[in-house]
Image (cartoon, rainbow, N blue to C red):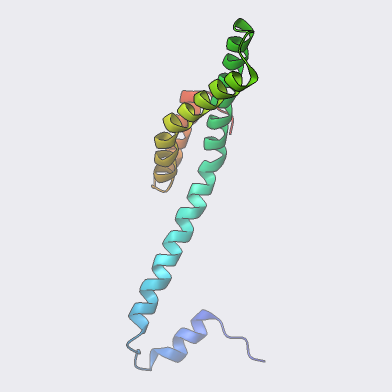
Length: 125
């Protein structure tokens, strides 16, 4: 068995003609490496985004409890429908900030955006 590192492989291939497919392969590797880095940077945003969603969901649930306590005559179906409506609205409101936070997290100054989100919402994640 022979162990070959990239330096040795590069020396071996240096004297050879580059096949036509190499530039295409390099482009594929570069694109995949960039996509991998984007996924890693977006993964760093996940705890912040999850904390933002959890905080807002907790606030909404607390307000729904207050509403349902003030309106004891609501049926279970009406309670479920009001809760579903509130949560649906919140998902719509949070959609764009969530998408933008993921996008911004892949920029070189991504940590600044995530820190701003933490500060704006008082998040721990």
